[in-house]
Length: 506
Image (tube, rainbow, N blue to C red):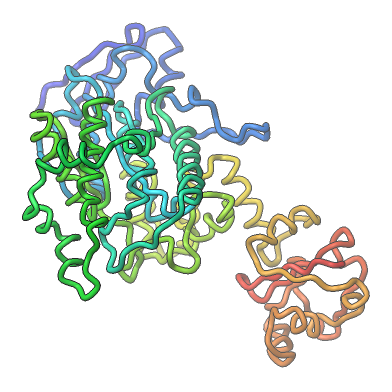
């Protein structure tokens, strides 16, 4: 039987581990109980009450498990972030196994970890979310984070994982995209931050804009070997392809590599993280740090790419991309995406995209196998957790309210404002009041484009699948009455559970 290791903290409270269980001996001070949930990170769940105030995000202090000297060391000694990532399927490769010991040594200062995001679109998308999740895990385990917006590298374009050169974006578009991405990262990490000042958002254009070509060739280019650069998988595939690779894209790995050099020297950043397709760019950085600065202690960590069931990447170029910005994709639609994921993907997404403990995830997996399991129950939990992480508690409440309002047969009273908010998430059209009044529901469903033919509308009505304002239409002779038009302005039609349409009355 292993001996129990004891430690004293928080006004005389003793904690010790025995047979892998945390045992506590509490002092008379009640303050410890208040702080207990934060000490049990990352396995503890901290629910925050919904606030209807003008500020939708909780203050940083409300999500702060680390404030006092010594607490960071305590967290790092108890929670090895690399082991956590490995257990949750978020670890692909390490440049050195020494990172495992470095991230949990209480005698060392916290690691500073960075992840880069190029502004090739005005918002991050679901494929980028893993980078933010991994940064958040480092924060939760007592380390520091840097989110790097690629205002400079975005002008070049990362060839990793691409078969064609990215289209060139003008300066104004890049600046707009960079600002949007920075705001998204601040919003998500800010509402999930471990402490004030635990993360910063930087833009690499700040140090590249005055870097002259001759200086770059002298300070960086002389340390790069063309053979090594050509051996990178992302480069080799492109060079051997019919389209080839431009010199601009070929130099991208040196630009990203020097970013790591700059951050290592100027900001104390010693870990770079990225998707598995970033391995070549990350190792370019660690190599340059050794050669230019003649320093050790720089690490790289990659995580698997977030893939769909068919093995393809989540991206921004496909129709219906899952954006992280609420201005491009509402919290309702974001929530619905995860509510609708196949059973086969639920467990993987719970481990990689949420901060639920593995024990709780295991219980949810067992629940799905029970004979009395209600379909989509676990998907609902997944959708709630990810939506809360990305959009905050207010965004989650907005998504839940919209979900209930759009549910056929729901007893929630619809008003004009509720339906109008939903209009951005479902198809909509406008019709004059005099054309809608006394029109049969069969005719209305066809004239609005909800259904293709009257026969299809009649068939759906007989099957009980045609709804007006969430109320089932039972009679083929049902016509639109004045009382049906919500607040005299709008109607909500539904064909089944998912096919909906908003009709604005003019």
